[in-house]
Image (cartoon, rainbow, N blue to C red):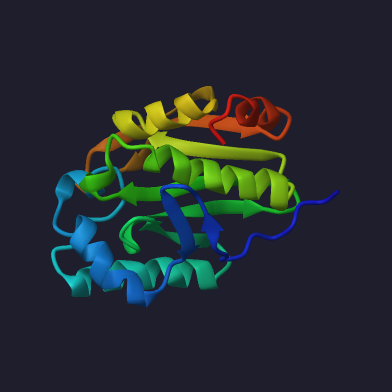
Length: 195
C-alpha cells in the first residue's frame, strides 16, 4: 500500500495532544518558552522575546506548511489544555515513503517528563500505522543531548554524522546526527509498550 500525504490532524496521547499549529496558540506558546534561550537553543531561529516575535515564527512555519514543505503540530499539555511547544513533519517524500520529524521544542515545565518521547511516538504511530510510510528520520544537533536521548530511547538507530552540516543562529557550525526508524522496526518499538 502506498504512503499517504500527511495532513494537519489531531492526534491524542496520554500527556500531550497534537493539534494543527495555529495563531491562537501564540500566547500559550510564548508563555511556555518565549524568551528562554535554552528552550530554543537547538532550533535555527533566535528565541522569541515577545508574543509578536513568537507570532512571526509561527507565521514562518505556517508558510512552510502552506508551501507543502512541512506539517506543524502544536503540543498541547493534556492536564492544562495549553500549548507548550510544537513538533513537525519535514522533508516529506510520499513517493519515497519517508519523512523527518523535527523542529520540536517543549517548555521547561515538561522537560524530564514523558511528554517529549510521547510527541515523537504519536507522530511515529501516525506515520507508520495511518499514513503507511516506510522510514522516519531525525536530524539532530550533535550537542542536543535531550533530543538524541529521546530518539535513542524510542528505538531509532544511528545512521551517522553529517559533519559541519548547518550553521546555528549564533554563527557556529553544527554536526548533524542522523537517526532513523523503519516501518519494519516499528512493531518492536510498539511491542516494548512505549507506543
